Length: 394
Ligand SMILES: *Cc1c(COP(=O)(O)O)cnc(C)c1O
Image 1 (cartoon, protein in one colour):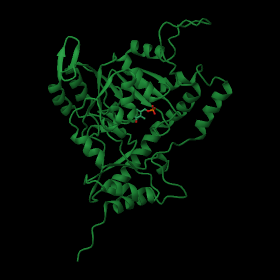
Image 2 (cartoon, rainbow, N blue to C red):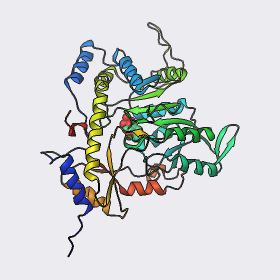
Image 3 (spheres, rainbow, N blue to C red):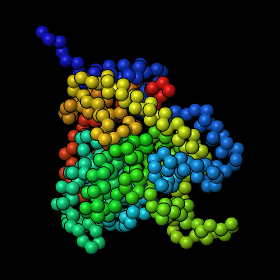
Image 4 (spheres, protein in one colour):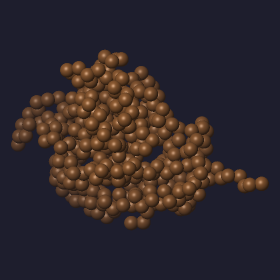
């Protein structure tokens, strides 16, 4: 009699033990930040300056570091990634009752930002290779749905204007942006990249978040670089950059003492204290990316040749930050994914399913959408593995 084939759960558990080691007293988290003496030094310096809030040099320094690292001409730091996306969409011209194309497979913030503009998320499918928007599928879909008018793209079915498209670089893997930008131009859609997960990732050597008219980053505690909470808007357009700063800082006209505000605006600026942490973290970003890529290489090697499960490698022509390592189960059978989640979490490894597809959430259930065969399969079969940079020695 031939031996029973190992279950996928035990295969993945073996891989976790090999790559991550045995869990200690506490669970191995999905993603934990790392802090050094340098982080403490800059935060302490900020405290000592007393400029912890809306005035101080660290915001400018952090923005300059982001621009230099990504190759974006401008970076505007804000309170979080969701606010960044809401402002970027507004600057992109998204108005009440417009539709905005977003992937059904994304974090809820992408759809929330659209809704906060009074606009309607319009969900599209993803690619098995990149886990993000598929430009070819998008082109086919829009050819059927869009009517081009002097006013831009119109949805034939709902009558609403489709104003923008928001590709999201899932778990750090870049979307095929060169092609996506072409498709967007064909349908006269503004491209706003949700690059919240992809600081440190490139497509054809160009940083994620520098392909669209605008892009947004997040520095939440679980992202590759954290400021506690924070976000940024990237753009190469100086007018949009100036407007982003102005609208996120109460639309105040510069004056030594007068309170001159001439638009309804947001208080979305990133506090100087958070920016101080961001400056220290940005110094370490290249090292963090290197560690995360090394962790991904170890997972990939350990999973090589395993039955029933595939490691999701970076797409062709890209260099991913591998923010979250991801495996795909071969079978989409209900139950298989839950078994793996149960076994790994029971053993002390914080593994997670991907997000529920956004169109299945109650507040977005009525939104327009494409057929989502790939997104449905990805939702049923993807699992994220522990991905902290601290899992690799510096
Ligand atoms: C983290 C994240 C955001 C925004 O996050 P904040 O918590 O608001 O900083 C937006 N989109 C995606 C895909 C994200 O992962």
